[in-house]
Amino acid sequence: MQFINIGYGNIIAATRIIAIIAPTAAPTKRMVQEAREHRLVIDATTGRKTRAVIVMDTGHIILSAVQPETVISRLSKDGLNKEDDLL
Image (cartoon, rainbow, N blue to C red; front, side, top):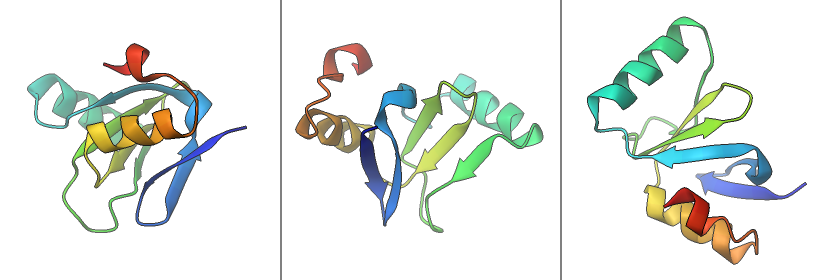
């Protein structure tokens, strides 16, 4: 299983990622709020501003303090070649 660093010492299973999106759009904010109500949000920002919302195939939503582009570049560096699927 491949893992990816999503910032500040937090790592996740790269093969379980469905989408990496910016948190600014209203639909994204609603999605995060609904996931919070169902206790499916994992806050990996360590108190910093949320810059990326990562949707997992388990239904969990992970909040990260690094930019979506940074996460995508880290996926590419690990040789997973998912950049085309994520853009």
